[in-house]
Amino acid sequence: MIGGGIAGLLSAAILARHYARVTLFDRDALPSGPEIRAGAPQGHHVHVLLTRGWRLLDELFPGLDARLLAAGAKPLDWIEDVIWETPYGRAPRVESELRSRLCSRALLEHSIRAELLAAGDRVRILEGYEVAGLQAVGDPARVVGVVARGRHGHDAAALGDEVLKADLVVDTSGRGSKAPTWLEALGYETPPETIIDARLGYSSRIYRRTPDVGWRALYVMNRAPDNPQSGVIYEIEDDRWQVTLVGYNGRFPPTDEDGFLEFARGLANPAVYEALVRAEPLSKIHGYRRTANRVRHFERLRRWPAGFLVLGDACCALNPVYGQGMSVAAIAASILDETLRQRHEPERLGPIFQRRLGDGVKGAFTTATSDDLRWPETSGKPPPGLRLMHGLVDRVIAAATQDPRIHVTLMEVLHMIRPTSALLRPRILGKALAAGRA
Image (cartoon, rainbow, N blue to C red; front, side):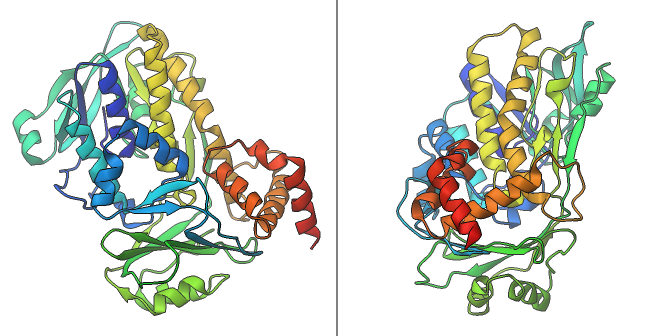
């Protein structure tokens, strides 16, 4: 395993079901507690765990929920516990089955890693390593290991540069993955890419939670095409709020005190700003700008080396504002498990898995990029029928502010519980069209 983020940890848990020994390399010296590590600077910002992702995590790690709750994570009903301010009004709040947990990225990753290591001795994590390349034999090439280069930390000093043999190498090293370069070095094509970049930026800060506000999360939407600013407040562990402000098409939220609050004041609804001016800041403000959607189409390659797979952000990196990344990683892990259970020949495993993964991420990629393409300075080719899609989605959101059942159905689609076609049912379409005329 290359990369010890969320996708790497989930995939390692799956591999431990099928292999006697799993070795996971990570560049960072890993923290002993729930702290933000150097390789995950996005940890300063709100991380959303959608309901489908939470359900998959709960199945994969039966002890995770108790561990998270004991550490201060909060149970969440995505309909009842969230104030959602849309351009058409506030969505109604009712009890639902759309459940998850609220906590920092650092706590979630730390807890998953602890559950993984507590499950047995099949998985070992070697921290402080950079994988410099793949080791391959034969023609056509078969990947038989990696070249690991020690960077820092105890493990790196103990091992140094060395070739480690493996029956299967899985790259989950994130947006900075070198998989295309490694494939090219072995004589394979590099994958074509699809990139949609809305030039979106984050700024985030931790505040002390104001008690008795009556919600666990607050989200103010942007309003296309005239207001590209949005904001979210999430309750996390230790009586804190994690606050993230978002701007599209280069209108980045500032990282200074006055600018941060002024940006919040400029949201389409004052709810976030009013909450912040009454709250106590606990951290400095952190910015983040690496948010383009990018799919590397490994599934389109005509040839693929045996013994090598790519998943997570190394394959499909989504604009993080939509909160899909961790759930897509969980979906990828479930696809990996299903594929390994079928015991394909090594030469067929990679192509079969990459095709299934490509199909599995299409819906999330379409959701993220379709919304990004609302903004005029977004780069990338829009799909046919995009304006019609935007009009329908806007009308469904407007209808959701008037009808709790439509709100729940819309959230089920966004949380990848139901297909997009659920929004095309006659009752929803009728209400949506009526809302559009109102």
